[in-house]
Image (cartoon, rainbow, N blue to C red; front, side, top):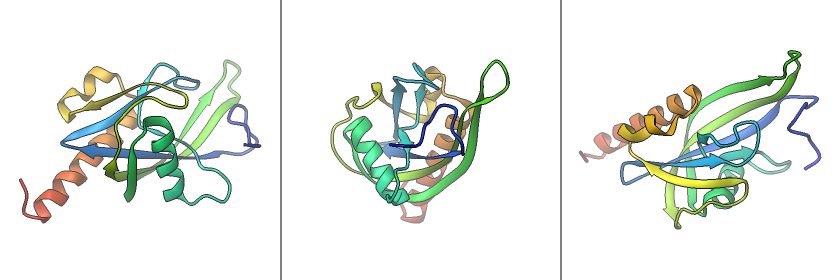
Length: 153
């Protein structure tokens, strides 16, 4: 990848995939900055020539071994991390999607150090960022809405 993540010349487009299966969301623990050691939504940088759906599917497979299909945009937001001098060290525009689980067994890959499946009630123990918590809760809400629409409880 030619575009730098750290101290970029322009905002960097990132994608995330919230996979919910059996009433649990797939989480990852990041292995590199800017959120090294923190639990988060699987995802990463969109590559040149790659569609958003392709990028999400690729990132999920690389980071977790899970095959999934993006189905619904949950949120677009930006995250700017500034250094001690106030300069933008990282600037991401993030597109997070709800994804339909297609198969695979969760395991850490790429820059991910751990994976976990968490129920909505268990999310607090993972110390997610406020944005990640908000997006995952939207995903749980969307999943419940779909189940009701299809006559499931």
